[in-house]
Length: 260
Image (cartoon, rainbow, N blue to C red; front, top):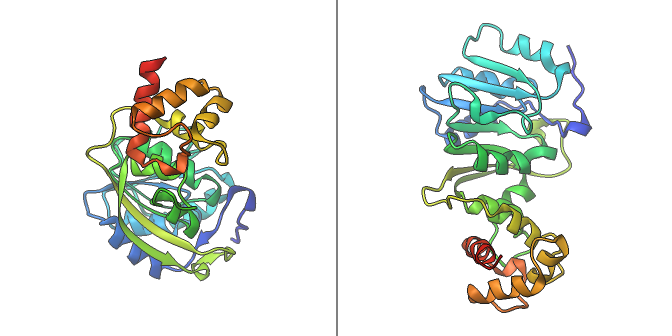
């Protein structure tokens, strides 16, 4: 049965099994692992995972793939295949709780899947995800660089990178017009207890504006209040979001809360 990938869902099916061994190494797969996979596609990675770990939760939004996945996973009793939108499902309630996320993430949901699992699925401790190379670089970009943005801050506050492998387009069908990468990261033990996501996203919402103006335009804080909070963390009123290190956004959020 031939299945046509859907551009609207950002589907690029993994067809080269050689890359699976790289994913296995970066994910540090163990027989006792419980793995979450988002976007199993044709089931190539799903079967590979199921043959090496204790249990796999596979979340797929495209019902048209059900016959192909059923055939690919035939004979496996350690895979729970769930059809639904991973961004709408309560992934934290999966049982047994997933400890690792290993996936060829659909391009159009890669960023929210990573951010949401970092913030809302505390059982996941390690990620090994295939994403666009540009996004992989953005996850761990340094301040004051073009790639540095809200997702950089949100990821780096909760994770540290432990592996990276560039991937060429020929391992997918259809071949994407951009390069991809496998990036592995683990949850930081010293991650902040509270999320400062609203502040981070508001700060980068108007990148050409100063941070204080961006917060004001979004309606998160008055400009004067934002400038006072910046002064409290040792930053000038005209500071821009890309100048602050991830940890400074935590301090900024706390200063804004104290002044409200």
